Length: 116
Image 1: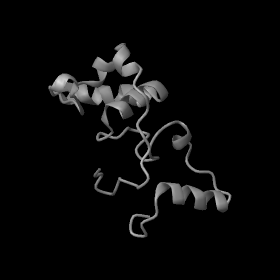
Image 2: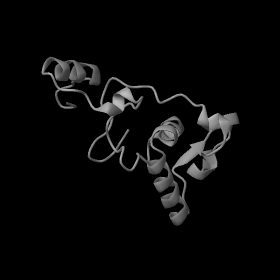
Image 3: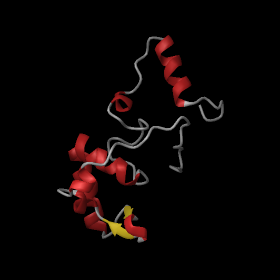
C-alpha cells in the first residue's frame, strides 16, 4: 500500500467493494490495525489511554513490561515540561481516562521497522 501510495480511506473503499470487512480496530477508534495484541510502543498518550479503556489486558501487560524493565514508553509534555509517564500512572487519573482516541490518519505510517 505504501509503495502504491494507497491511503487508508482508499484501501477501506477497495475492501468494501470486494465485500471484505475492514479490521474491527478502526471501528473501535484506533488509527490502524497494527500491534493491538501487545500495543504499539510508539502509540502516544492518547493511543495508550484508548488501549486502557478498550483493551485493559493489553494495557496491563505492557505496564508490567515497563515496570520489569524500569522504562516508560510515554512522555507527558503538559505545561511545557517533559517527564516520563509510566502506564500505571495513567490508571485512575481523570485526565488520561478522558482523553479522546487518537485521530486517524490517511496514510499508513507503520512499517516493518515500526517507524512513525
